[in-house]
Length: 115
Image (tube, rainbow, N blue to C red; front, side):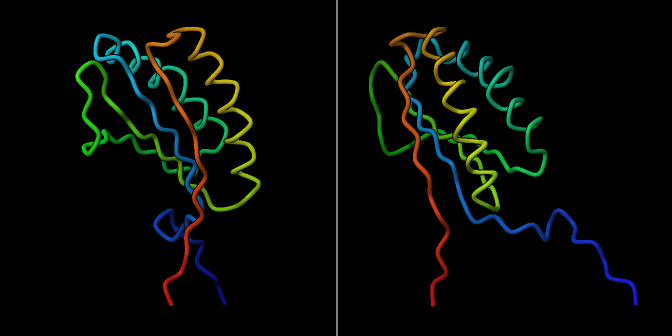
């Protein structure tokens, strides 16, 4: 009997590593470029099965800055540990590049079953 290999659609995500960014409006274009050249490719190369999404927060409006959320979905604690390790390195690079023009914090979410 042949067992079908799960497709990428069968992949179950259990954790979200969320990083929220507050970016000065004047720096958004440069920040997006940094995300596309540094942040996203680092994780895509390290763990190709990750799902990475970028959102603009709509509920929080500031005159001089815009808030974004980058959510990295993964399946297990081992992947989460790798994401956390490399995120620390990348956030140090971000601070060196943008200083106070881009602030951030990260949080880890675990999916819950509603029973």
